[in-house]
Each structure stands twice: as structure tokens, then as C-alpha cells.
Amino acid sequence: MQSLSSREGILPAELLAEVYAYRGDTGLALEQVQIAYRMILVESPDPMENAWLALPLRNSPFLRQLHADERWQAWSDQISRDALGELSEPIELLALAPDPG
Image 1 (tube, rainbow, N blue to C red):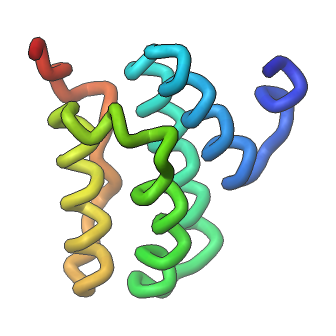
Image 2 (image 1 turned 180 degrees about the vertical axis):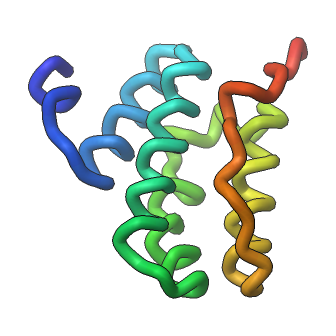
Image 3 (image 1 turned 60 degrees about the vertical axis):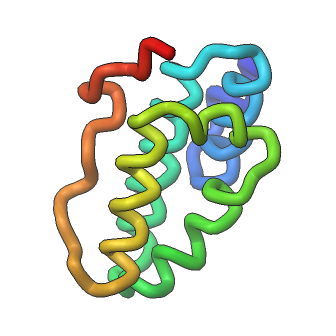
């Protein structure tokens, strides 16, 4: 984990998100999702390409448990808007209140 944490890039952030989600640490998992998506936005100015690059995050079986969290839904909705060309500033996932359920 320490080796993965010291690496930069989209893939290490995605893998860390999966590890944290597996461990049940939703906050850290969402933080890594946010980091990965910011890197995607930096790598490609094309909104449709961003949506494609985010597919591994959105469809990861290891991140499914995050789907019930409203922060995940807000992030997923943002990707959909971005893909349609309705670009906005990336939302702060950790600033949103976690789902108490």
C-alpha cells in the first residue's frame, strides 16, 4: 500500500480507491476517486474522452459498495454532465455529507 501511495497517476489512485473501498474506508476511497478524476481532467480536455477514461472507476466491482453513498452519486452525475459537454468545476466529494444509512 505504501508503494502504491507513493506513485502518481490515474491507475495508482484507482487502485488505492479499490483497496480503501475493500477495507470499508469510504472516505479515503472517495478521496482517491476524486484524485483520479482530477488527473483524468488534466490529461484530456475532451469531455467525452474524460467520461471514457472514468469508466474503470464507475464500473469497478471493487467500488460497488460506494454506489449507495450520495457522494458517489454526485460524482457519477458530474461525469454524465461532463460527457454531455456541461463542464463544471469538479465537485468536492469529501465536502458532501456522507449518507448516514
